[in-house]
Structure formats: C-alpha cells, structure tokens
Length: 328
Ligand code: SF4
Image (cartoon, rainbow, N blue to C red; front, side, top):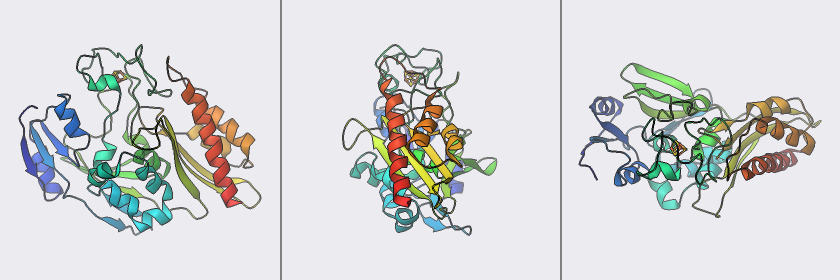
C-alpha cells in the first residue's frame, strides 16, 4: 500500500480544509476505499476521516428526515422513523452487504462506493474508468453483472448500491458542502451515466463533501418496498433490484407511482417512462407489464446479461402486483 497521512475531521469546516490538500480523499467507513487502496487502484496521499461529521438523523420542518452523511448504514436501517415511513429504504439497506459491513459503512460512503466490475479491480485489465483511454475489457469479456441501460462504448459498469436505488425512488436530495459553499443535488441526478468520461461518476466537484441526504415527507397512501434479485440469499450485489412506491385509489386507478431499478445502469435507474405509463391507469398485471416493457425497450444486452431484461420486467410486475394488492 502506498504511504499516506491521516487526519480526523471534527466538523464540516475542518473536513473541507483538510480535504483541499493535494491528493486528499474523504474516508467514511472504509469498506470500499480501503479495499481499493490495498489493490493499488486508489492511492490517496492523505485520508480525511469524516465519520465524526454529520452523524445524526433529524426531523425536517417539512415533515421529512435529514440523514447525516456519517450515519452508519445499520443505524439508518434500524431507525424507527425510517422503518415506519420509508420501509423501502430500510429494506434496501438490510439487503446490502453483511451486518459487519453495515455497522461500518456510512451513508456518504455508500453513495460514493465504486462499481464492482471485475476489470476495474484488476490492474492488468483495460478499464476506461480506472485509466481513461485504456479501453474496456468488460465489453467483450465476462459481463453478466453489467449494464443494460444507459451504457456507452467507453463503459458498461453498474452502480452497486442498494440504498441509492431506494433514495432515488424516494426523491431524496443530497446535501453537499464545498469550497464554493453549500448546494443540493437531486439523488436521481447525483450519479452520472458513463458517456465518454466513466471516470467521472458523480456531480461532486473537486473538494466537495456530502454532508447529508434529505428525504421529503412520505406521501400518505403510498405503499413501498425494495426487492433484490441476486445470486445468493445474502452478501451479494443485485443482478436487478427494484425500489417501488405506488398509490392506488379506491376505484383501482393509479394516483402516483415511483420506480427505480438497481443493477442495470451506471447509476440507480429511475424508471420515468414506466411511471408515466402507469399514472392514471387501472392497477393490474397488464398495465404493470406494459409499463415495464416501455421502460426496457431501450435496453441493450451484452453477451452474458440478456437475462436482466426479462428479470427486470418480472420484478416490476411482481412487486407492483404485491403492493397494489396490499392497498386494495
Ligand atoms: Fe472499466 Fe467500466 Fe469497462 Fe468495467 S465496464 S472495465 S469499469 S470501463
């Protein structure tokens, strides 16, 4: 491992000052970054530990929640407000990683975790994300876990987070602080599609720090859940996952719906085409399947991952059928 220095920030101002130093990286729970350092994929000159910064979950004046970036994933999943009003978020968190990792991992670190593309972690492989302009060995290689939506010739990686898929469907907002002040970015826009610059994964600018995530009030009448299809029952990344919220009127009309897919793209994939297809329709399998097919019409499978298209369609139909049934 390349030598580095270490500083522990006590508040956002200290973190930003320390983070402005050349080669500095912010450190959360270290459950991804330390692995990357061990493999020589990342070589920070300085680690700024921000696990003591923004560690609370507070109610907002609007009736939502403000979750500090330093809150541990296990604590967020167990928070009674989250379990009661945002069950999809709690389920998404509990479906990720292992209890030990969830005890360490922070909300900010979860958002910024890197793809699990095998070639990204192999220094001998061509990878535009790791070394811009070097190529992409995943395109013609083993690409079972890779993207079917929004990919580019430069990169077909997927974002691995479960939590972020739920946050996207919940219309969460990421709070960011940086040298130019504070700003907010919609979760659905926070992660970028790869385009020609897969090494730029988020909208964070140089030196900026995630300080928290804000959830709007949970809408009355909304039923929600998170379901994950994966190779093992635990400790596995999503092949496809779905965060879904739906509000069905007494006459069966879909008043509102929000859907986000995981495991299919370089960012949590907000299924806006499917949502538009569903609003005002009568809740039922035909409408759910047509909406899924509308969203997935643009999917482009690679050699090994064509199964994800059918899997995503079945997941959307099954989850919405269950949620609408609960509400009837
Ligand atoms: Fe690298 Fe992206 Fe290609 Fe994987 S898919 S090898 S992360 S460029």
